Amino acid sequence: INDTKNGVFVNGKFCKDPKLANAEDFFYSGLNIPRNTSNSVGSTVTPVNILVVLEGILYVDFVTSNTDNRLITKVLNPCDVFVFPVGLIHFQSNIGNAKAVAFAGLSSQNPGVITIVNAVFGSNPPINPDVLTKAFQLDKIIVTYLQSKFWWDNN
Image (tube, rainbow, N blue to C red; front, side, top):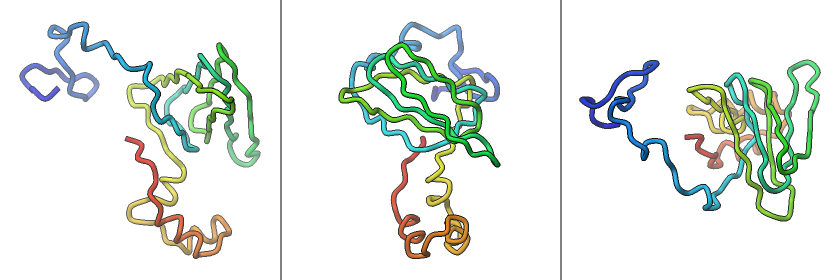
């Protein structure tokens, strides 16, 4: 909404005045068009992240908190549902031979995502390579190389 005369604030966000809402405001045509759905390893900061598989086979996982750091994995088929606990590092990947279709739901008006590789190697300004060299027990050349790469934009 760009017209401040026709808007209202809801939870601190500028929104369209409900009295001016119409069906087009709640409609989207295009879920039938395949898109790039490459998912990087990340963490959501919403209370619940739920995934429902409609087509295909997905491999999902998450890692429990320190000190256990246990990997929880599951292969999902159509009609399977998986819930990722809040704040844990998780991932999903298509392991089938066909396209996969899934719906993800986040139980928040602010579905924040923290992509681990972006946060660590793509920070602005960059984290001191000496710190990352020690933290990941990598050669400094590798750390510098990783910091020079383009990382996905979460927006």
